[in-house]
Length: 377
Image 1 (cartoon, rainbow, N blue to C red):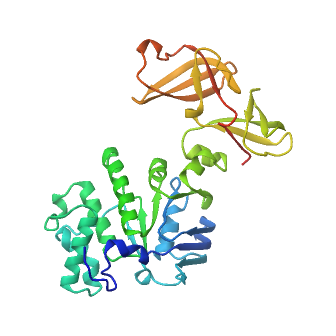
Image 2: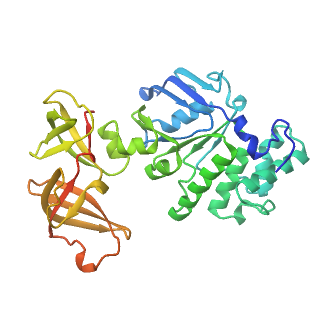
């Protein structure tokens, strides 16, 4: 790594000093009569890896482009570090952006692609070369600087694009679904590599994705967006285990929702009666007065399936309607007597095939009181 610690030539170990946090407050944006962002406020800590997660049209990419300066907000402010950059043009902001299309110049070598921004910034040839070598080592492409992009795999081209973004040591790196074009195996590998690189350089990363698994496996925190608003922001485990609403529960992972009303609360337990008459006991906080409309939400992996009653706080009998085998696990859909389908995830631990569930089997599904959460929104 380069030993010169002049501005722009710091080794990877010092890059964290260049990172900056981001804060947006009261951001609103409309295209014509269509409101895309509605009073969005968010603080991203220095050196944090944050994912903006949501479906198509939720506003996540527009918010990223406003942070980059590629779009102008109708209202609100953007700060990077302690500096208000709301009206600062994109080329003067200490950020870089990596797009879905890597936009590498096909006629330039890998090294020349990485050096392109440095050349435009007036960095000398020797310093450009040292920085390009550092960036190639960072993304584990040593020795490939002479190749052209067409001579690389998709994953290698992505790494070149990432190296080009990082070589100028931006305070914030913005990533707009950069792995959307990769196949599943390569995407999993690149997710791990991207997290490693972010930890190495210490730069603040903001990732836009619609892939819940990608956000869960990579981010320190996830901001879930819907209809132009952030509906919940927190660590992946909190988002998954303690969703703030039905939307978040459905969007992040699979879930069984028992829609109904609160019957009573006793000894820290909420009793919910579902619309089809099932009673669900939930050991998760205060809900509200009796009669409050709510839903008890429980993840499939917390639902046990057995051929005999197991004595759980919540237990119902039913018939296996459908099975989906995924190697390490099986998803079982069990039809209860009242018609409700309950999904359970069964781990395939290598037992005898004769013990495996089959469609038509009579079973009991259940979960303890600590497994569900009560949602009122």
